[in-house]
Length: 270
Image (tube, rainbow, N blue to C red; front, side, top):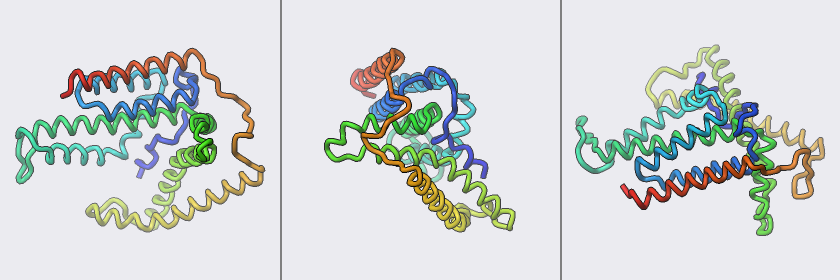
């Protein structure tokens, strides 16, 4: 049950690193571009560039690698399942057979690429929330979505909802862990039996977890209303967003990475 506490997406780690000092709009844009470019990578050379960019980001963010690796533990089963499906369901040259299952070289290659893709997505998403406070993340999202207000998109409301959702991920995971421990102390068993039985044993957890989530949402709404909170373009801010030379460097490096990966798609198609 400790795996629930390993989820890093939504947590914020205070610091003064290069990545922490970047404008939130820059960080959101960098992560967005990285995710888009990631899905265009089709060869090993492109993934080397992407992995290098992710490693550089982690080093500059000064986030303990152990914390990021710990955040990957809850998705290890998903990663292994993805790799196995690609390995045995992709047609190509036979690598080995396991009963009725046939593994191929093409499946091995595709499986490695898919696992790397998921890992990089999780690392960059975790890095964004670990180095950006919820308030800054809200301001950055609102600023990016601001131009869409002219076509009726509620920029502030969308930014607030996304930020609150990210902020409450670790809170709900901690709440779920407490509920599990309380039920286990009363004799509940969440770890024995086959996967279907273990999944059914989690059903009693959902009811108190949903009740707790709705209670927290109601308390948050009441707190915001009692403080006369009103969103929108007329709302003032204590700290205004300002891009610096550091943001320009980050944008240039990201643009270079994107051009290299896209270029490799055409120069080395396979």
